Amino acid sequence: KIDFEPKESGISAGITCYYSTATYVRCGISYQDGKCIELVINRNKGEEVIARADDIKSGELYLCVKVRNLTRTFYYSYDNKEWFLIGTLENCIYLCDEGVPEDRKRHTGTLTGIYAISDAPEKHISADFDFFDYSNVSL
Image (cartoon, rainbow, N blue to C red; front, side, top):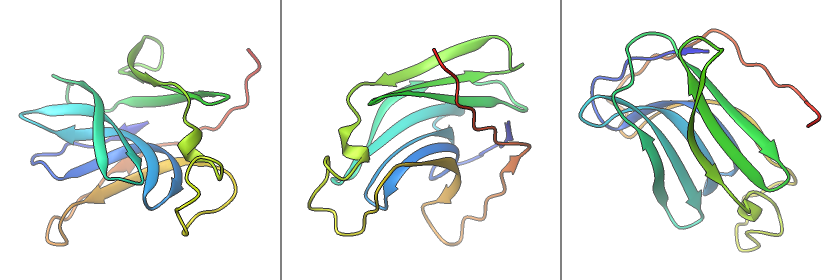
């Protein structure tokens, strides 16, 4: 659960599936002509916006990623009951050792967590994460 109200582009906060500084997926609240949620990947070649949900309401949001083998599916909700699909990424092999052998700053495994970033040091941001829940659910 996150409360984050960006007022300019270049800042974001949300959830991530992280492998290294150059190889990750992030799904977070951003500002692009209004509050939005962006699904962004970096496969060791720079960031690419894969999906965007526009016209996001002010106030708290819930973000969710479901991981099943190499697939990552991202959702958001206003009430933690009704969920809206942001996007699905198939074959996320780039989030493991086998996927990016030329990345020297890597580790074994993929991290899942939260983040808050700014593209410039003078842009100070504050994101309030109420909780982060990690569950292993059998399907």
